[in-house]
Amino acid sequence: MSDTVERIKTLIIGSGPAGYTAAIYAARADLKPVMYTGMEPGGQLTTTTEVDNFPGYPEGIDGPTMMVQLQQQAERFGTEVRVGMVTAVDLSTEPGGIHHITVDESKKIEAETVIISTGASAKYLNIPSEQRLRGGGVSACAVCDGFFYKGQEVAIVGGGDTAAEEASYLANICKKVTMLVRKDHMRASKAMQHRVNSLENIDIRYNTEVDEVLGEQVVEGLRMVNNKTGHKEDIEITGLFVAIGHKPNTDIFKGQLDMDDTGYIITEGKSTKTNIPGVFASGDVQDKEYRQAVTAAGTGCMAALDAERYLATVEQKVMQPS
Image 1 (cartoon, helix red, strand yellow):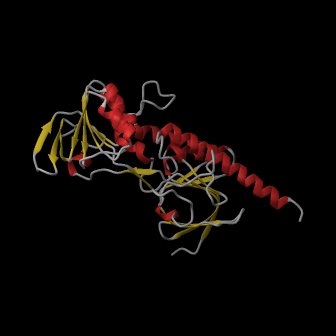
Image 2 (image 1 turned 30 degrees about the vertical axis):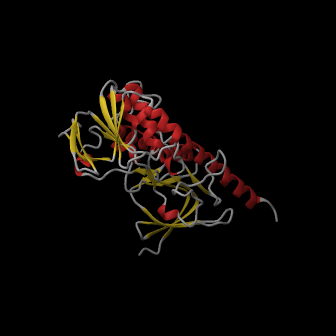
Image 3 (image 1 turned 45 degrees about the vertical axis):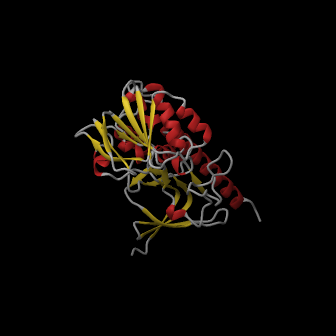
């Protein structure tokens, strides 16, 4: 284990749109940000083939290319991007306190401010055919990718509010939506159930699960199975949307940061401030409502500005005569 401790003014944990935007603003404010990318450099957008709804790209852009460009922009202003995983944190509860971070279980860092942009991971069914076709017709975000299936037949898995909302969205642009609900009822609110039931091109299949996603390079169909009778049925679809929830990547912060009952970090009002001074959260790690690249980038900007103001306040107090 290394005994060398590095001191950093602003540490950014995570490298999606929130993290890179925070890095751009922090670097321009001379906060000398250091970013650790985590296990999935670039975040969820690296698994998205086309990004058509981020401002400034009239012809669209693929997710991995967009994240490379964001990294280059952050580095242009002086951000140091490092490949590594934050494995432990000891956050100071005192204003102006130093936060102790461990990277890859060995490297020790002292950070004056920390911006958490670790994101959230979509839950998948973990069926081999589903995993193989992620990016080839299997998606966990209908609002992000539904446009590419306009006028086509698709399926969606899930029975909660998110699944119902995304099914309704897809029904407005797709020819037909087959909705697979694992139980004999939906978990969605009554209002959302009424909305889904009122749309003629949504076919709800209760007690139904995915047996296999059909297709070699892209989704060509779906084999469904009734979990009561065992009966299997194939349907032709071009897109499968999995809407069974997200898990925020916040395990290492539990017990130190305030979170809701599902693990999302709670921030103060419209800011990115957490319950610990000098620690800020941006992107999907604190947003379970919108989960879009553009909103994540916006909160990344906010986190950098919050960190800059916090450091200015701390420095001002240090300079004041006692």
